[in-house]
Structure formats: C-alpha cells, structure tokens
Image 1 (spheres, helix red, strand yellow):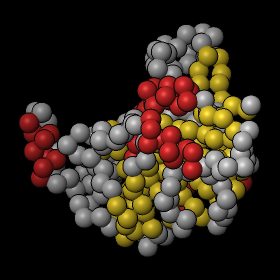
Image 2: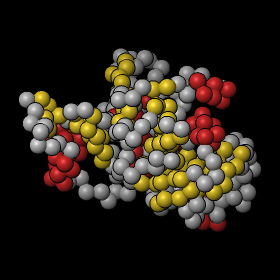
Image 3: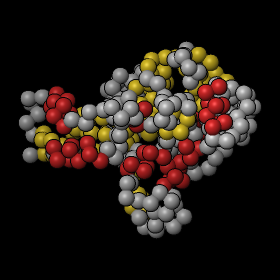
Length: 302
C-alpha cells in the first residue's frame, strides 16, 4: 500500500467546493500494484449513495456496485455503506500520462512520481468511448460545444432542439475545461454540467470528470501527454505475500469471466517457494459472479 497525500498541499486555491475529496494523490514508483484502502461507514438519515460517491471521489457505478442491496436514494439511518477506495493499477497503464480503464469507470495520471486517480463518465450505448493509445492535442478553457449532426439529429428525434454551437455556460455539457484526445472522432476529456453522471454511461463518447477533478488534471496535463484508453474488467495484484482481486462488469460486454483462465493467471503470481499461500477459490468465483469492484484479498494462510 502507499500513503495518500492530500491534493490540497499542491493546489489549494483550486477548491471552492467543501467536503469533497477531489482527485486523490499517492506516492508512486514502478513497484506499486495497488493503492488506497477500502472503507465502510454508517449512513445517516440524509445520506444518499450519489452524495457519498461525490464526497469520496467515486463514480456512480463504483458505489452502486459495491452496495448492490442498498437503496441509492434512501440507504437508511445506520446502514453500513462500503466505500471502494482501494484500487489495483491496470496492466499496460501509461507511466507518463493518463490511463482510462473503461470497465472501471476510473482514470489514472502519473506525474512527477505521483499517481492521481479520479472517476469518469463514459459513452453510452451506440456512442461508446473508444479504445486506443493517443495524446492530448488541444486544451480549451470555457469551451464552446459543436455537436455533430448525428447528435443534433438524435435530439430532434426526441423532440428537442440542439443548436450547432452551444456557448460556454450552465447548458454546456463540456463544463469549464476540456482536453481533446487525438483519436479520430473529436473525443474530449472534460468537465460537466451534470456531476451526477460521472461514473455512468451517459455521454456521446467523451470522458466526463467532476469539475474539481478536471480543474486539477487540466493543470497537470500538457499538449502531447499520452492517453491510453483500455478495458480491464479483472485486475490482479500481489502485495507482499497476499493476492488481491478486483472484478468489474465489462464495459464492452464481451469479456469472458472464465474461472480456469483466471486460475492460471493467479497461479503465475505464486511461485514454488510460496508453499504457505493458498487461494480461496470460492471467494474468487464469488467475485467473478458479483463483479462488485471491491479489491479483495483472496489468499488464506495454511
């Protein structure tokens, strides 16, 4: 595990919103496989899962999947809420830029030996966020939005009018800041005028961040920064002599949740000298079924 550093130490002037944990910052080196730790709390009467997600810098899907039997609007006084704030770093992540793991609805930025993580909203059905390796090729403050004809036609079919240009302001879905990635199609990493949509499939393919997160990421990102968009529903980490597993639902809906294939991957992390390490395969099978996104220890000791 690695020790969290407060973002406020670096850019305290960015924050005008209280009681929110914006893009969290951790020490980073190449040996790190996992960071943070899962938490739990007792809900109070006025809590909702949506509000708790924002407070702990989680996306909607992250907190909903970790608490599948809890009412998202009325958890109830005293209900135990799981806060999934331990994360395993995806394989193939960018060590010099931004990585977005689509199935996780989460982004990572490596900068000056720090790891910054933040939740994201993604493209919905028929407008999926693409995979690929790209770079930031344009940065905009107070951007106007120029929706393509296909998006304007969609609005028209729904009985709504969408102009060819949406000026900066409260009706602009790009929010206050936007960074275009070089994958063809005009995809942006941007803020939002609808923060509750972060962590959902809600956009026309762009990547949405909380306003407080895009404020930070925008400042740390230059034109030319590498951006990797990947899709890893299953992540595995060996932390000292323990194996951790984190399973998400597949963004593409094409992932094979095969226990035997996963068994092979896990056993590769356990060498012949590790005779005291045993895997709780029932726990592994349960995580494959629930796909709750919680990083979970699956080792037991003889």
